[in-house]
Image (cartoon, rainbow, N blue to C red; front, side, top):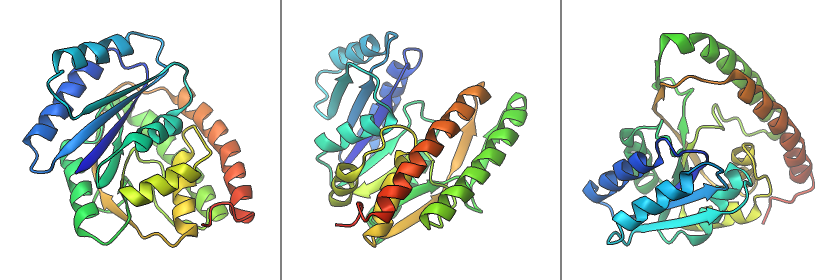
Length: 249
């Protein structure tokens, strides 16, 4: 069984439709599954949209919902989802579904058939494909350049040697997921780095797979720069914990 965790924030415009799409995907899959939606303290009508979906699909017992009253960060939302996950494998993906169901299926297949405990979507893989609107080209250039510099810094300070630590599609076997997220202390966007540092410290096998990534929306460079600043501070915290042996069992 697969536990799919969807961290949700300020998603009133699309969350109802995306839950419908994800539910249909799970119903048509040969694998049994559960969907765990975690609303990270949204202040718009995201909660209303999710509750409407649950009411209209109450016969679907494979859906779980956690409504956090306060915004705590993407990492915290996924952590709460992992706590209630009952699947043999745990996968989280972004609720805007930028990663296609084909990507999710490929990752799950690798998770089940490979001996790796952690499988990562890798946007930098030589076989990965980007789908980009022309008006987003400037944003993509800035983000890609900043992302490559930041990823270089991550690998320098952590020794991870991973091409893409920040993709919003990752999978784990249940035992590994429970262990990594229990050790996790970073609640925001740098949580990915922390769980990977923890995995490496405990010799947990990590595999990356190529994906097709869709940049289809108008992007905010300002928000991305703010994320980089906050994540850099979190990275220093991770480095200190790594040096003090916090992540080792």
